[in-house]
Length: 621
Ligand code: PLP
Image (cartoon, rainbow, N blue to C red; front, top):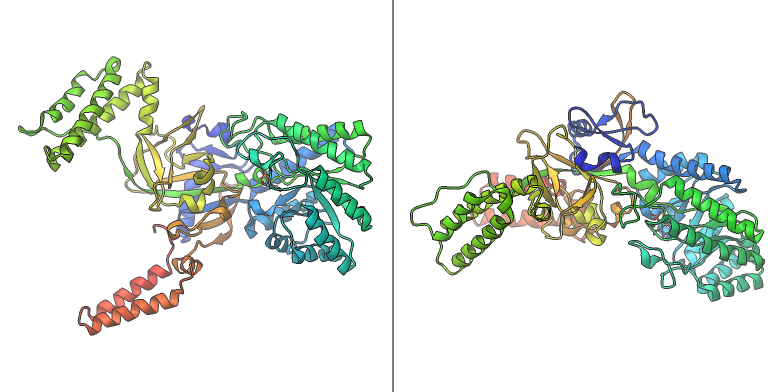
């Protein structure tokens, strides 16, 4: 199983048991027995919870929150930094109540807060009892209602910071604060000019969508001073980006942010907090390199770099060390969830045997069959060229009517059998590296019970890579290679890039599907952004979601279960009324009875079938 590189990317959260099961390891109790994932799935199945499902692990989420806060605390102690870290979790990264509730609960010991980028997210934040010093940072576009609620929440003791995104927004805040007679807690969003590499390059630099340039910034500072509100401006927000691959980009951007901070301080702005936004990346591939899906630093290194850079810049300018804030979302929540689905069936792209030829078969079939006669490692490329050529010719003859359907089927089967043998020889021959890679792309298609568009939208939209592994049989060598196709009727709904040990491969090593039990695949690190970005393509709805806690004895406790959407629910999202659908169907059935087309007994069967579908899961059951 070393082919999957689990040791490289799993951050010790997974292991493989001697029976080949992938198992979850409790980071809080490394001595505890790992908990078998297939066993968890079997237990859930007995309780009536089927795949596809999202599995959330409480201790995975808690471990990341702890690691982030401890890493900052350690860097602060080591550097002699004279202010604390007060992180906030950006709700948009995973808004699910189970996740946010747990983050708030576990984060209380660290005075951990929340970031809200919209009115609904502020409403969520204000439904939590945060600790005394925890922040609520409000970003994004704000109307009067948003600003009013943020200011009024101060009366309940919330440290709600309104981050001003533009001079226009500053006017809304000035007016609303005056009308309410309550001092707001303010921040300014400063646009950094430093461009950060990686997938989210455009969210940094001059042309990024949010934040103010120097001119706008000074206009806002002057307006606040004129209005007697400058004393409320406590926080500078400079968002670094998302999934920043290179730690030296972090240093450069933080240095620039500090320049603004010290200059604003010199302008008489009483700033106390420096918020560096998101950007702390996740090493999805385990490469530990500055690539789109990996990072060249650890969480501890990121924290140390931030603390050292800020300390140095502030000391040099003679400015008090500010409270450090980050809005790390991905790094906190990605590892805590996994998507699990079963494989429904496979389409194989090779055949174990070749058919006998008929006496009057076209000579192209014989040519194709003859290739196996010279199939040796030294001539494997030649054999592959010939096989492709003869099959192409055969297809052309079929299209023109010179070869019939049965001959064509025999030809395809000979080709698929050749393919199996060519793949085998190319894989074993040291001379055929490039050919082996090319043939890996012509893999089986494993048809899977999930929707890429609903559950892994970033894979579809921005080629995000997530580790994917069969959850069982890893004590056996995988005998097939496959690309994965989802259950939607969309050819875009496929996955054909896989993280393996030491490479990104065009197909995933898998096992021939067992006949007597399900074959599950797990997609890991899906706890950030995936759940609410997903859409209803083909009306496949939310999957079942289960939150578990790992027990020291190798078992687990089911903390929460959220049933996936029923068909009635997804229909109502697209403006159908399930009751009137049932009524219309029933009317058609009654008309069929009147016309003598069906019997009264069939009427019941038909209506029951329609109603059962309406209440069923949208996925293959
Ligand atoms: N804060 C702001 C303002 C953002 O726009 C984002 C995401 O891009 C984040 C925080 C979260 O970033 P990440 O998930 O990379 O930590």
